[in-house]
Image (cartoon, rainbow, N blue to C red; front, side, top):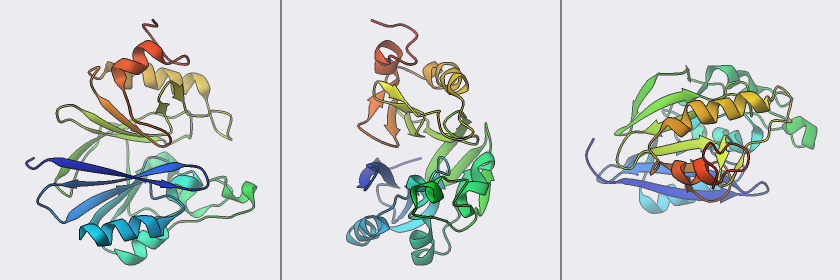
Length: 218
């Protein structure tokens, strides 16, 4: 893979959800990861940068991370919509993705492709490794770009000094912590984590300072 990797964050209300637009320098195709509830912000950015969507990725199926899928797919119908196999049902079911409980039903087009642990995707000049880390949702996946430093698009698994909620339906706190410790914390300490909410962090920082999952607390 050649060309510097650009990562742009777009924050969507009302849950301050992070959407990531990822593209390789010198290319016009990009990835959109977790299109939030304000897709017009994403589309405006793509237009200003002259980018087209090569693929639309979801780390999981909760409404605040899939709310922009329909608008992005309408604008770029050729872009495959990709999600972990265990969360695919949430795309088209407002009760499964929890939006119905907030009185604002959200649905998405169905997945064009589902992924599981260990798969590798080559999209828009970016190679992503899939890790399955359930617990926040049953089919939650994260996408790892093994460059230097490594980059993780982590959805709602690991935040800066916090972790994703596990009190939603089908949540599992011990399973979430186990996945963080056995998969993410095995990555190099300078690995940069781009989470679904809040600021970026690193694996090294969270190994030491995360009060929910730290293995070598300070």
